[in-house]
Length: 130
Image (tube, rainbow, N blue to C red):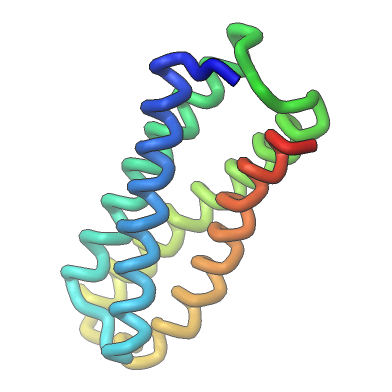
C-alpha cells in the first residue's frame, strides 16, 4: 500500500493523540488527584485527534480512503463520539479544578472516557483491514 503524505501525517497525529491522551489519563489515574497538567495532556490529545480526524476525513471525501464504506461509517460515528467525549471530559475537568471539587474521584470518569476513545482509535486500523 502506497500511503499519501496526508495519510502519513494523519496517522502520526492520531498516534500522538494516543500518546498524549493516554499519558494524561493514566498519570491522573495513578495520582488519584486531577491536576492542571492532566488537563494539558487531555487537551493535547484532543488537538492531535481532531487534526488527524480532519485529515482522515479530507482523504475520505477525496476518495483516497483505504476503508470500506462500512468502515468509514463506523469511524465517522465512533470518531464523533470519541471527540465529543474528549471535549466533555476537558470541560468537566476544568470545572472541577476551578471549583476545587471532586478532583480525587475524577479518575473513574477519565478511565471510562479513555476506554471509549481507545475503542474508537482501534477501529481505525481494524477498519483498514476489513
